[in-house]
Image (cartoon, rainbow, N blue to C red; front, side, top):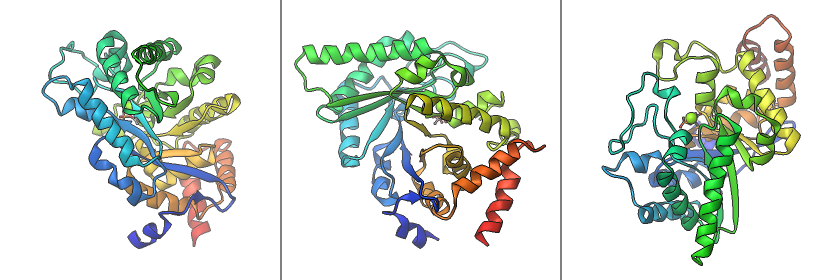
Length: 325
Ligand code: PEP
Ligand code: MG
């Protein structure tokens, strides 16, 4: 199997019906970057920036972060890298930052909520990103946006930092794309302006699913209880796809489910054209996508939607088994 995946490395994830899905990888360390070439990923769809903060005993310095981000860009050799600003709180706690003792940290002071309250940290990280991408493209996204104004406020901070760099006479990125992670159900129903204003949107399926089903992603008892292919969840994802489509907003999905072949197939079938996953999942996902007609998969999903079923898993599995044997 490894061999087969290796032979697919430089081939596109194009389905039998001619639809191409862009497959990128998730990363969080410099050490992840060699997988970019090895896996055949088209870029880094999600670079989680927490690790450099978590691994330190004190707040990392702007210069060190800029150096690291710049090395990440170098290692990507022109392929796009989407940096996600700091997503701390919840399960990721910085030992050197005072934080409240919260009964429900996943619902608490985390990610962009911290960023907007502690602007110094966010500004420092954005400065590092702007400097690291001078003369190149900066793709940055904000985690855990739960209402439109949070995205606007975050973007505003970035705009000010760009202006500041300009005034200092520093070279700026040649292009800047500012995205939002969609990982709370509130944003499925966000005002149109959200879909219009974001340069791109990435679905954080891990968190979106946890909040959609009100089931803690860290809790073994409830974690697997709800199926990603549950029709309720697919309906929500479909709504995001349709709303992005209406505004021409590029959309990707970067939760763990993107790396599961059957789930990836269903995501493609409902209209996702960009999936970001662990490097090791790229081969298996590409292999399956290249063997299916997602128009047919879409019909199976449509039929299931109007049947008495709760999840698409069984019908799609049946269809797939018949198809591949
Ligand atoms: C997600 O929530 O799906 C996601 C990609 O981010 P994280 O797993 O880091 O919360
Ligand atoms: Mg998340």
